[in-house]
Image (cartoon, rainbow, N blue to C red):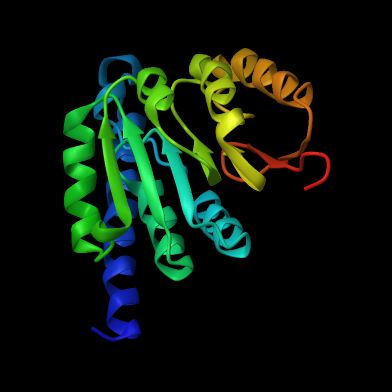
Length: 212
């Protein structure tokens, strides 16, 4: 398969995700209740954030990528495409098997399944067993888990590793957890960070330990 066809496969899969997101938005406008359907919803990071994490991972030459919160695989596509260019792999974690099953199908259709290592279960337990170092991390799971996940990841970061945390500005109900996460990261030695108003708000941190 040539590069043009490979890119076309990815674009078709992303377009399908876009169509699903648009349909969900119409249903919400018609009266869907978020709390009743939270575990069924795409709740993707969005195209701007997806493209930005893709660019950041490529720019960093990241070969060992970690995703906390596969969900239905939208962000996994962006990370796996970056890993394909860098010659790396993505380890992606999620608690819900049905979501990862859907994601596996989409990544296979995108031609990116070989770039992904799937882990299903409790993120905190899985992180204890994973070996680093990691060059790039995307945090996009339940926001009250951001700090304990960060504490498990931090000792396994490669020098100059990048961590992107999503949902730092929206939704409003998770703002307290987002604020606590940013304050926690700022206290960690060697972390330099910036809050960006992209998508639902992302906090981009770079690990630069002394002497690196």
